Image (cartoon, rainbow, N blue to C red):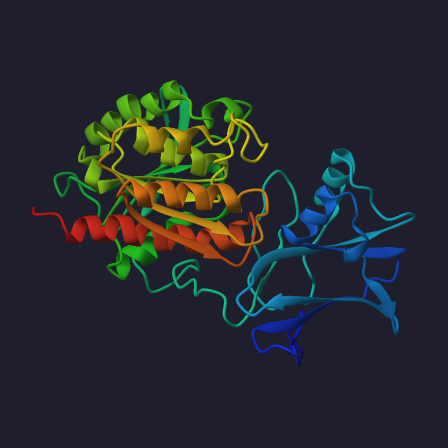
Amino acid sequence: MNAFPLIAPDPDDAAYRLVTFISTEQDCDGVLALVHTVTDKDRHAGDLTPHLMERRGGRWEITYRLRADHRASYQLHPFHGAPPGTTRADWLHVLDHARPDPRDSEPRLPARDGRHPASVLSLPQAPAQPYVRRREDVPRGRTLPRTVAGRRVDVHLPAGYGPGLGPYPVAVLLDGEMWGEVLSVGDTLDNLTADGAIPPTVALLVHTMGPGRPDDLSCNPAFVDLLADRLLPWAAAEFDATDDPRRTAIAGQSAGGLTAAYAAFRRPDRFGNALSQSGSFWWPDETEFDAGSEWLTRRFAAEPHRDARFWIEVGLQEWMLLTQNRHLRDVLTARGYDLHYQEFNGGHDYACWRGGLADGLAHLLGRASANDPC
């Protein structure tokens, strides 16, 4: 049986592949291919035509020319009548009904809010993700639901956890309901621990995907102070978590990535490590280079150096974020910060972020443990 999508060499450039998506759906008038961020870019431009599959020999096909290190989640959307429009309402309808490729060849990416999972395309040179999948031979930690200061927090305790064996390093993961309930990040944490990539760590999965998200994850000092002054002391008292900022990391994606970096800026006394993926560093003004944009980057440039370390990554397909992340990289580098910066060939996509999260935690917490004089 062939693996799908079909991947062939590009005869003109060995750095690229020709990737053909196929649908055998018969009861439809057309099929839209949703390749994460790639399709979104044209939807933002008001034209989905480049992603409409063509009818060939009783099936629907479309071929993309993608660099050989590309990774993306994708879905297929058969439709009746006219092709989908590009308004927000049209797009939400597409996302609600799009489905995974029934003949995909990689484990699927789960979804939330009742939507269908997505298939995953990983081309041959995409970064390895050795910690993502559950391993049956790895000792399992456990996850406990808790409420702190009126907020839901899921606490993942490492295998072998026990009172008096700490203090344990801490990882605060924003959008915890996605990482825990949907993506099973506990498996990733258990794999990292079993391989010695991180020390046994208490992970605090903070739920932030509700209606308060735009306020919480927008360089909000009250939210960061709640994490620093309520959540971390609670974790220290309940689970023997460390109060050492050098062994404490905060991680987030998109607006959460902005907030992770802001936490290290505002409260380096509690958050000594920030892991930002596809951070929304344009905030609060999406107009590139406008005087009101990139508030946090401007603060890092103007204010005294913080004692904090950073892992920052962004996707090459993220046309709305790439320039701003590079700008922050340049500022942090010029100011002498301890920074690991990388660009992955993908988009605003958990298929990419779940691998980067593992690598970032290993870099920040594994290194912090190795350098700990205790």
